[in-house]
Image (tube, rainbow, N blue to C red):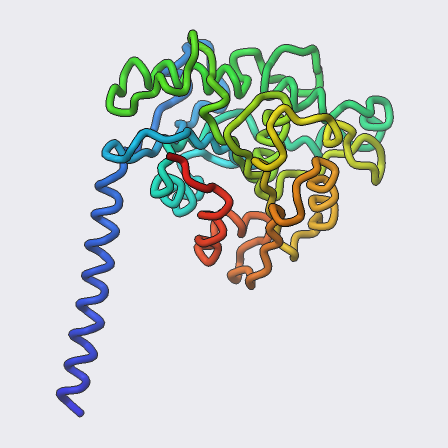
Length: 296
């Protein structure tokens, strides 16, 4: 019995050591960069916490996965397990730092929504492109998601030669066809909005918000024709989310195939929320692989 206990103890120690070594090897195979937005564009003052960049320099060049955090999300605290899976699937990954402190649902509601049924569309247009006169958020043109991504890609192209970032640019502009867009909550909605207007490689919307045009009426922009083919669209949510039914309704409005809608249902860890479980819980690793597909 004594010898058996020693054997079990040795086996346990050996496994822990093996996993520790494996984690080190995996992290060593990735380039991980943290870059403040103001380093890429001196005009940027707000939401200046760093962008998070990850890729494997020894892998075949793949698509770029652009991930957009949800409301209050900090890029460097994003779902790194999900990003590691993306890198293993052949993607370069950017978790973009942008202004996300005010959610769409906090602005476009009540009397505001009653007076302007296009409130959510105008909100997202300003936050993504910075080219419209929407007065209810204070985002400046340089704060827009598109400007931040463009300036970051140019910065990386000039300063990180190993990443070969020029693949994702064309004449100094974003080459959307080489980019898969994704995000969680507010960020998932931004990804979907972008994929409607640009031909992207893939779109994965994690619990991407619940925009309305009127009380209990989902926003009309969900029904707009998509430039990105529908076989590239994927959406997820957790069945315990308070807005799960509405999120599913938005996915159906966007014509996402039922087989591409993932209804996560594993128990949510104590102290966590179903709304963010889909990007955080490693129990969904196999689902992440299916959702992301091969980046290269």
